[in-house]
Image 1 (cartoon, one colour):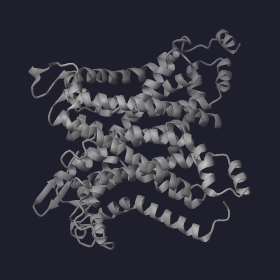
Image 2 (cartoon, one colour; image 1 turned 90 degrees about the vertical axis):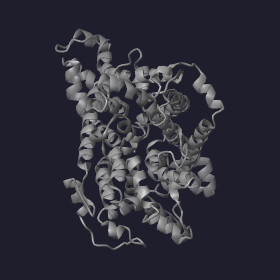
Image 3 (spheres, chains in turn purple, brown; image 1 turned 180 degrees about the horizontal axis):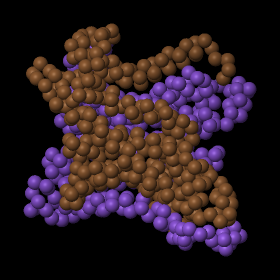
Image 4 (cartoon, rainbow over the protein chains, first blue to last red; image 1 turned 90 degrees about the horizontal axis):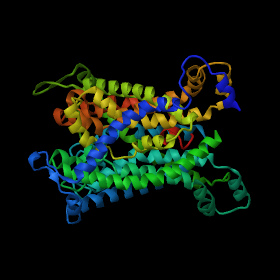
Length: 307
Length: 285
C-alpha cells in the first residue's frame, strides 16, 4: 500500500530505481574491501608454494608440503601451544577479573560511574604503547616494578627478558589493557537485568551464592559469551603487545601465530611457511567468529528491542 | 542486598582500591616519569617527590635532543602528525563510504545485503597479517608501498566495519514512518536521507567516528608492515624511538604520554557511546 503510493508520487531529483539504490549506496564500501580479499586468496596460493624471498628462482607449488611439514615441526607445535595458552590464560583471567569488577561497580553511584570511566583508560591506550609503558616499568635498572619485586624478595626478577617469566609478563599487560573491555560489557549487562528476580530472592532470603549461580550468571550468559568470544578472537591473534614487548623472544618463548608469521616473512623470508601459518590461524578464527556472530546477533537484537 | 555488613563494605572498598591502583598506576607513573630527568628516574628507590621539568617535552617538540654526546635529531613530531593525518583521513573516508552503506543495509533488505554486511564484519576478525603480508608485495608493485593512500586504504579494515555496524543500528532505530511521510510529501530519497535520516542518526555517527578514530590511532601492525619511518604513526614510531634514543627514558615517557593523550581524551568525551561501540552495537550502555 505504502509502496504503491510512493511509486505514484515518484519524487523528482535523483532518479535511481528503488531496486538499484541500495547497491549503489553499499557498493563503494564493498569495492574498497574487495581489494583486501585479493591478498587473502594470494595468501592461500602462497601457502601451497615453496616460496622464499631470498630464493625467488626456486619458487614452485609444493602443494601441501608446508602444512605436512608442520606435523613434524616442533616450532609449529610451540607456536600452536603458546597461542592457545596465551589466549586461554588471558581470556579466563580477564573474564574472572572483569566479572568481579563489574559486580563491585554494579550499583549506580557517582563514585562507581567515575571508577568505571577511569578503568576504560587502559583499554583506550594503544596496546603497543601499553607494552612500552610496562617495559619501562619492568626495566631491570630503574623500573619501579622491578624495584617492588625486589622488595618482596624477588631479587633479579627478569620479567619479559627471562623465558620463565616472559609469558607471565605479557599476560599481565594483556590483562591490564583488556580486562576493562570485559568489565564494561558485563557492567552494561548487569545493569540491564530486570530487578524483580533479585527482589523476590531477597524477600525470600535466598542465599547470595544461590542468587549468583542461579539467577545472575544464567541471565548474564549472553553477555559473558559475547565478551569472551570477542576477546578470544582477538587474543589468539595477539601481536602488538608481544611484538612491542619481546618481539617473540626470548628465543621462541612467545612466538604466537602472528608473531611467528611476521618473523618468518621478514626475517627468514619464508613466505610459504608464513602464509600457511596465517591460513591455520584464519581457520581457527573463522570457526570462532561463526560462533561469536550468532551470540552477538542475538544480543544485538535484544539491544535493538530495548531501544 | 540492602543490609550489607560493615565487613563486606570494607572488603569491597579494599578490592576497589586495589583495582583502581592496578589499572591507573602505569598511566600515572609514566606521566610522572615524563617530567623527570634521567638522573631522577635512575635513582633507587624510585622517587615519588621530584622537581618537575619540561625538558623532555621541549626536546620532543623542538626535535632536538641534547645529550652529553651531542645533539640528536628526533622525528617524533613527524610520527605524531602522521597519526593525526592517518586517523582523521581514514575516518573521513570510512564515514563517506560507510554511512550510505549503513543506510542501505538498515532501510533496504536487498538480495545479498546480509551477506555483504557480514563479509564486511568478518574483516574485523580476520588475522591482520593474513592480508598484510601479501599486500606488502602487491603494494611494492602498485607503487603504494609507504604511501598515505595505501595506508588509509588498509585502515578501512578497522574503520569501515565499525562505522557500518554501529551506524546501521542507529538508522534502524529511526522509525521508517518518518521517512515515508517525508517521501510522500514529494521529496527525493536523497533529500530524505540528508534532511531526516542523517540528522537523526547524527550523534551515533559522530560517536562511531570518534571510536573509529581511536582504533585507527591505536593500530600498530598495519603501519609496522607497510610504512617506513617517515610515514609511521606514534605507535610504531615510539617503538623505534626507544632503540634510537637509547637511554633517554624521560623522553620516551613524554612521547608515550603525548601518544596516548588524544585517545584517552576522546574516550572520556565519548564514554557514553563506548559500550555500544566496543560491542559493535550489541550492548547498549
